[in-house]
Image (cartoon, one colour):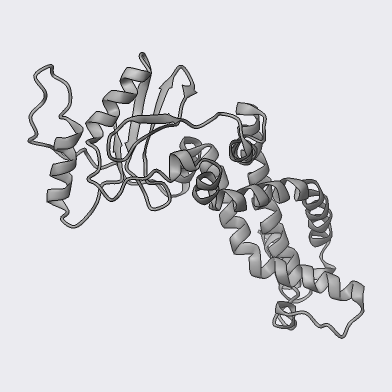
Length: 289
């Protein structure tokens, strides 16, 4: 019984010291060392991911500038082509390939785009918005493609994808330890939210790092956690389910559309017409097969 009281008292003493005098705790000094070296090692990674991600935000505009023959197609406001026609043209031009989707024109790209794939070989194929005629496919090598490969795969294929997830996990650790190190104590926490420019340049630099780190910690953690999810969604869902079980997926809605005579699914045109009738005033975005 006495041993339990001592352990409890020790834990309570550590908590009080951390809340009031965090600089005096041995754990904080150890965390500071880990945070420092982790930040130095991950600095280049964060810079590369940040720059490439910023470029990809403007991907449609940049792609339209580089490939105007696919993104800026003259159409004179005529009626859009039947998506089934686009699908058939792609299937005819790429025999053996499976078309995963047909995407409708957008304000940034006024052409249809589809993605036929075969054994890991995925093409990005554009079609005329009015005639449905194939315009060509996006080259696999180029500036934007290199930016995408760098951002997602770190130019190392599947190995780079896994490395991206590991590095993003380390960024979460850096963000959490940074918040712990920022805590100045109950008396001075308000002052730690700003930077005192009247102090020496070295002290001002440290204060600037702490203040900026605190105000951007939420953004950093959101960026890192979303990166983990996007690289390994199934693993992420499994881990989250341990803490907070995810709701079961809702059953697919039933449909009274009649199958084709060959037993295949209804034509895209019928599906699009039905979708628009259910939600009037909308426009289709993507047909996924």
